Amino acid sequence: FGQRILILIPHPDDEVVGCAAAILRARDRGAQVFGLFLTTGVPRRDALWPWRRRRHADIVAKRRVEAATAMSLLGLTPCGWSDIPARSLKDHLAETCARALAVVRGHGIDTVWAPAYEGGHQDHDAANVLAAALKDSEPALSVFEFAEYNFAGGRVRTNTFLSPMGSEIAIELAPPEINFKRQALALYRSERINLAHIGVARECFRPLAPYDYSRPPHAGRLFYQRFQWVPFRHPRVDFDPPFKVCAVLAAFRRHGYLR
Image (tube, rainbow, N blue to C red; front, side):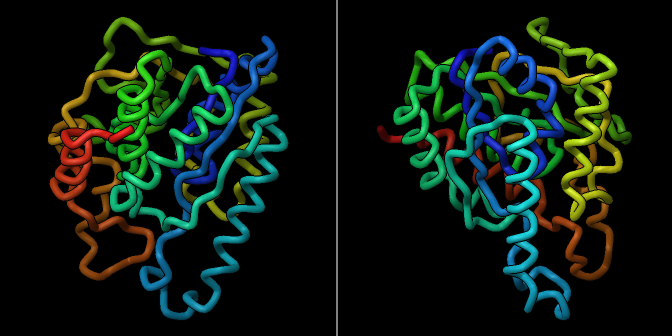
């Protein structure tokens, strides 16, 4: 899992959801772990309810304070925050890749961790294609992905890969690690409803799989599609269709990242 590890964090809380125990174990063996936040974790201002829009900056600031507290608990070294709104990382792939590559080179990173391509959130999937681009630019870099959550088969699955490849590394959390992860999740009080489904018994990693980003991660409804039937623009619902997300990710993957 590396000695100088960079975690690509799509939203503040993904570092806890996907790899809280793995971070602890890495630090226990002497590794230094860095965190790069790729979005604010908050949708753009005009996507919020009208009466909350004037508080948009306060909502973003609160999420960042929660993240800073979680990073302190985890022992992560912060190496960058982002002003990109949630659900729009796909529209900023080139600039974000450049930022991540600068961190890799500037901090002597030997290993990258990123969310799996599993349809949990479009920003998670965008972070996965960024990890692939980093690997292209730095062939010596080790890149691992971690499972967060998906909706394959019509039910929520957490910390489990869609299609096992035989290279999975399952981390079964000991009772103290379970308590620690619950403590870390609780720091994200603004996200307590969204985090209610998260499991705390295991975490799962594997070397980054070769994905076809032109296709959704799995058949059927994706996790972020579950409530797209809502007939009005609800702020908690991501209304981007997967085919649109996939088209952007695939185009970026085909083009590649120019060094």
